Length: 104
Image (cartoon, rainbow, N blue to C red):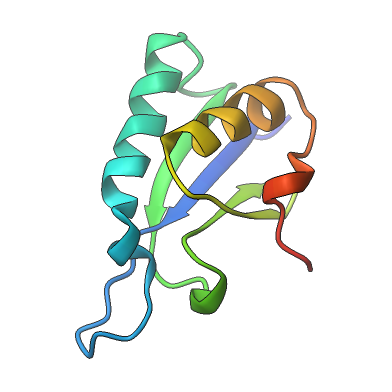
């Protein structure tokens, strides 16, 4: 087993030139919400799950973007309700949220 069962990376990249980026969708607040939620569930930490911010994932036009590893499943989301669904279904339940999944 790896150090974390699953790792949720949420892009928080900001672009100075004003072009589309995940930061325009309040991605940092979404990441904070996801981390707090897993901690409240007692499911954040070694052997469980981790939420991290990351820089550009190069899918800006499909953003905001998050990815779950080691499953390599990419998501776009609209709000914290979508992130909660990713947490409940994918991280905790092991089921891909098809309606939010981005194509490979």
